[in-house]
Amino acid sequence: MTDDTLPEDVRPENAIRVGQAPRTMSEAMRKVVWILPWLIFLGSPVRDLTSGHHATIAVVLGWVALVTFTGVYLTLVFRNMGRALPDRAVLALVVLLGTLAVVLCLTLGNAWVGLFVYVSVTCGATLPLRTAYWAIGANALAMLLVGLRVGGFDWSLLLIVVLLGFAMTGVKQLVRTTVELRKARATVAQLAANEERLRLARDLHDLLGHSLSLITLKSELAGRMLPDHPDKAAQQVADIEQVSRQALVDVREAVTGYRRPRLSAELAGAQVALTAAQVVAEVPVEPDLTGVPDESEAALAWALREAVTNVVRHSGASRCTVELLTRQTLDGRVLELTVEDNGSGGSGKGPGNGLTGLTERLEKAGGALDAGRLKHGFRLVARVPVDASATVGSGA
Image 1 (cartoon, rainbow, N blue to C red):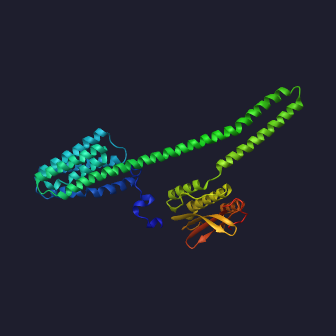
Image 2: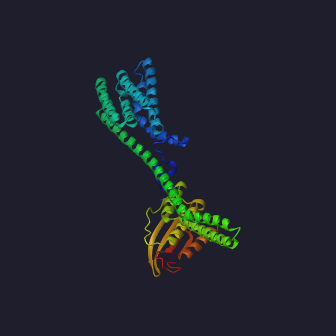
């Protein structure tokens, strides 16, 4: 499925940020388009005012009240999507809406009963949950009494008022949950980063603490021996050099281990990168890496990173599929990574430096790389041995 065949409401460029204020004019317009169809219940009051059944003063006051009612309703709904108003202000505006609905219905007739729909929606969307339940019930009762008073009451409209009010309480809970999940995800990411920094600090302390202490002691000892025993001081300096070299090797190995890419992390990063580039992505979430050597996993991770980079930067693709499969070959089991897109594949006529370096990296891990253009797109297939004892070229 390409970006063009996706439904309008799920395309990245058309997504509405639920529970957040619009960032751009385009987002504000999409929110307006989502709200405006609900103003259909204002059609009956507008027809009533333009029918000529009321005196001029009644028509003027009716238009003023209707505009005020609509403005208060839109203000409450829009602010509820972003930075909400204070509770007292919300309660006062809801009471104002209810009062206007009652007064307009009693003075201008049953054509204005539809205003209670907006009062119910506002109660469910803006008031606290318990308060909203009572307010929706009170609004429905007021609508019933007013409707019976003015005559021509539509009982189906009463059902709509109740259902829409309680439906909006559910929407409000969903929005709140979405916002809380977004904050929790950011918190978890921050905690994970902090934990990784602490682990790195502990490992470096364990690696360098003893070595640096030994270097300090031997340096002091060499300083004391230097005037009278230069040969022994030279031996201490040689020991210092050996200890410092070993410490440097340990640090390099530790940093290499931390910098070694992990396939699960690269898959998650690929999903984020492709989505940000507005490419429809199909990426496995939890790969089975049982028995896969670290060197093979790192090679596949590098292959995935290079492939996704090419898709985002050069292909112009709208769809990308990533597959990770374990296959049985004559040389043993291999883990196969396939990245396929529907783009043009870039403007180059031969393999670039990235693919050349990737081929060498995979061959070093005992794997192989196949990459080439398709009729409509580009496909990269990287294979590495699963068994640690596999020979070079297995699965190629």
